[in-house]
Length: 121
Image 1 (tube, rainbow, N blue to C red):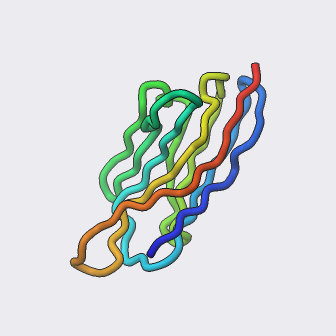
Image 2 (cartoon, rainbow, N blue to C red):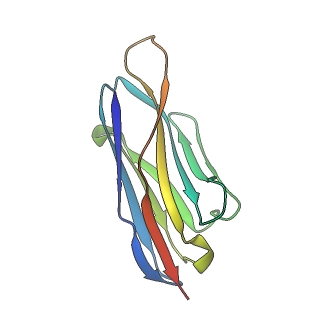
């Protein structure tokens, strides 16, 4: 089993910045991919950014140029640096990870419980 714990959310004024963190722990051989998603009240969960190990990053159009996803493999942690925040960025932000618990075995997707980001105008 793998646990993901997000941190770094909070209240910030429009134009401000926040850095979210998500640390994974448990039965981890390799983390194949990370993702940040968000869900605003009354809306569906949407992708913000993904990081595929050894391959590429991907951003939603709303995040391009403002958000940066990065990882610390030694700490099994993913970050989301968010700059120039807007009120429409207000949401609960969730991280997920695609984890292989053993060499050559299957991968599983795990989710964190989310961290609230509120951007005031």
